[in-house]
Image: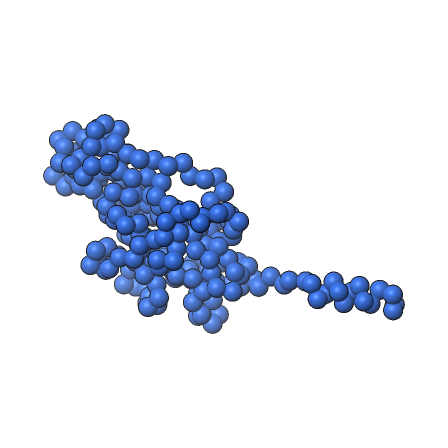
Length: 215
């Protein structure tokens, strides 16, 4: 027994116990999102992005090991790759995005992650390339002002080890700029949680964002 005890003590002193916690996420996105924790999907917006005026907030509880990497794909509605909505009607226009979320310890209520300018966000769909597309009587995707810029989605972008250091930071926006609608007011947002997007609420339609929780 004396021979093995030192080995046991050395092994024990080097063990790192994962802090598995039950977390509650509260999310509002104009218009649709899916969220991952450490590469595993934990929430998907229950209202299809194809639903007109799909404004809603989502709340979900899940378990994750902390510190965790939270990844969220956020999409503003677009009818096609022109980036427009209500095409062919008097309401034809470019939509605008926006999102806010907070993640709390489900038991204590402690905030462990929020949306703010510390997030890294990559724009993977931008359209139209010129705002004059919204004034065209017959906007055609991929042509002229109505062309789009599409970036391939990295296959492992939700993984904790993914290197997002080259991605730009998110940009915080005011309530006045985003005009958050249905569901937003039903959540009591912590002061640290901010409405965010890229620097362009209108032409940037799909974002991939990542942030690490506290321990």
